[in-house]
Image 1: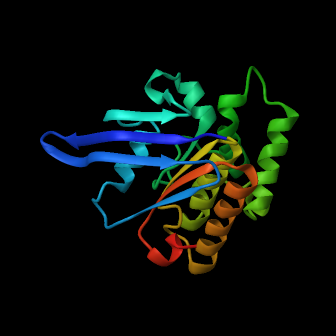
Image 2: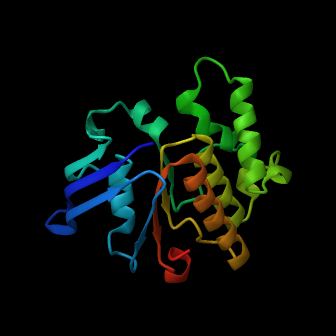
Length: 202
C-alpha cells in the first residue's frame, strides 16, 4: 500500500505555466479522476508523476521523493498507460503484456511471470488475442493491451492517461469496472485522466 503526496507542483514550457501549485494526496484503494478539457494539464500531471517530465515541487511515495528513487524502483511501483498505442517492436499481444514484468524479471522469465500475464489477459478478456501481432489490432484493442501491460507490473500506483479513448461504450465500462475492482482488491492507488464526467463518477 502506497500513499502519493504531491506538494506545490509547478511545470511549464518556457514562460507558459501548465501546472501551478498543485497539491494532492492519493491514498491506497483510492481512484483520483483528473477531469478537464484538452490542454488543462491532465496528461502533464500524469507524466510528472511517472518522472517523464521534471517539475518543480515534490512528488512523494510514502514520504520518499520519487526523484531520489532509481528508475527501476519507480517502474516496480508505478504502472503507466499512455494515450499513444504505438510500440517500437513487432510483437505479439502476450509478449507486449510480458514487457510489463520487466522491472521484476532478473536474467530470465519465470513461470510466475507467465502466470501473471495469463491472468491479466483473462481478466481483460484478451486471451483469444494472445498470439496476435499487436500492430494489427484495432485502436480499442491496443488500448486494452496497454492497460494489461501496466497491470502485469503489479504496481502500487496505476497512472492512466485517457484509458477509455478509442473504446466503445461497452468496453469503456469494462475497463472502468476492471480498474475499480483492482484498486479495491489489490489496495492500490489509481490516477486517471479522463474527459467524460459520467465515466469519472463510476
